[in-house]
Length: 310
Image 1 (cartoon, rainbow, N blue to C red):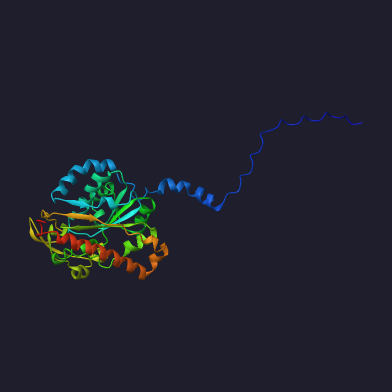
Image 2: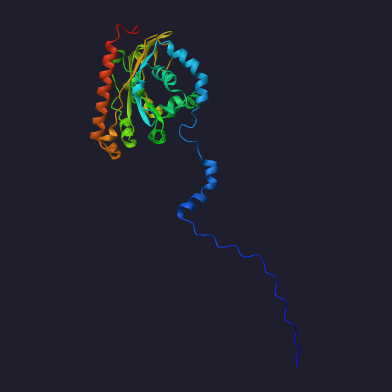
């Protein structure tokens, strides 16, 4: 008979196996797969460079500059209590337009520097070394649909001068004319986001120099639009150099500047976001805004007795 051997002892129990991972949704998987990339490619939010402490530090200089124009800013009581909303102004003053510093210094006195106020700027100006970062800290963002919408959808306040270089270099004879050059992007922006639009009309800013010619044809001939997105090649008259191209700074004449903030337009009560693609409605709103601002400019200009003196 064969000898029986005692059964071998059972091995000690090992650690329990890890449970199978729960299935993930496609969104979760995409988020996980891109997590590493986010740490290297994430960009700061639009307008995130704005620094109220920086604004407070440079405010005395800007206040001194604005005071040179004996400014008067009316209508802060018409502004909405908080954002989001758009402020749309007529652009004046050539290569050194004083309208924005005059408006902002008064704004900070009335409502403080902490309010998230931003302004759209041309990429050409923001591209200058040292200038762009300083303007960004002051609230400047590059003009463009995505950036503008991001500010408004985030509850911010956005200042826009839709006439841009075309209006800021309009000839002296048209100094009291609203001339956006049929640029209606600001209307589409307001309709898409459903925010109120506050007109900001200034008079006197375009008496700080004399624009003799806008030079739109020359700019096109020289290819400025293709190279720099600039549509003018102006000729201006101002101290200390006299007659100069628009790119050379001149010392502004001490014209009295008055800015009036008007009653907000709330097109969202009549039109939905989809109407931003309706050319008929966009032009209707554009004409309504321009007509209202022109009537205000006519009234403000009638209050002035003399150019520059006011």
